[in-house]
Image (cartoon, rainbow, N blue to C red; front, side):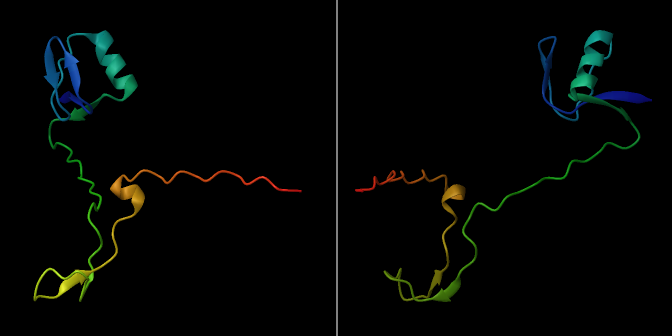
Length: 103
């Protein structure tokens, strides 16, 4: 038997349905809208689909052991490169503007 499964969070009749939850099908108009918008799909109840988790690296790449200045102690420190400015969320540096020619 097919079930209507939420793909995105849906608020319907004062109840929140999370992705993977079965949705009620008594309102045919909303069922067609959900399917048309991609918010829900019909699925056989034999085997539920599992969505794979996607992860992004948020830390600096692994560094090489070495001496860093200032050192944190008697042990060797990791020396590596910091994450890019975009990854860190740093603000871009303001541009200096165009120079006018003196001619």
